[in-house]
Length: 111
Length: 118
Image (tube, rainbow over all chains, first blue to last red):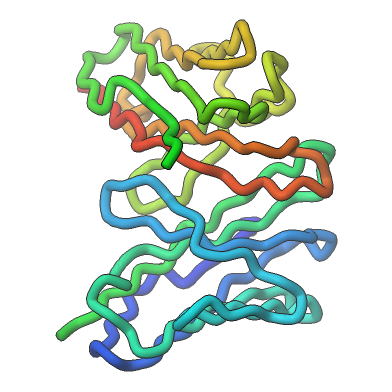
């Protein structure tokens, strides 16, 4: 079983709609979680950290569910520029805080 | 905005040849990472440096891959000999905080080096 699993998609979303997707992780002791965004053939960039109480950054909302071991990302009022692959990242509990990346969820926003 | 520099951006080589990638992290970033990303997959950590020391190379194929960060600043990742399965994007990233259990680990990635092995 992979340590971080994501639905690869693609999620086809009309412009202005809301899209949400999850990421599951296997290590219940994991402490830190992040969402990174990766445009086609570009490097990943930090979108947002995920806090225990959930957090928002503009149109983006991240949630953490420790009991079920998943994190979620919700995008409201989708823009064409939101089309990208969203990578779920989980920090391991080893001494050096190794980051495990999921394979990503592709979102395609259509006009 | 500070950047992580990588070169070359693209490399085409034949199998059994040697290839090297270079990375210059953001100034002051003590932690440097090399990731490999195969198309359609997430980045996989190859090696993590804290200053000049390797702290994690558990996923580095040591029979053919080597990495160094001699002065704790820039770093080189080498593959010798290259194999067809090494075709991928090689991403370097750096972080301003230590990779310890409570560090923030916010990574800044370079643009990557795309390797094609023929």
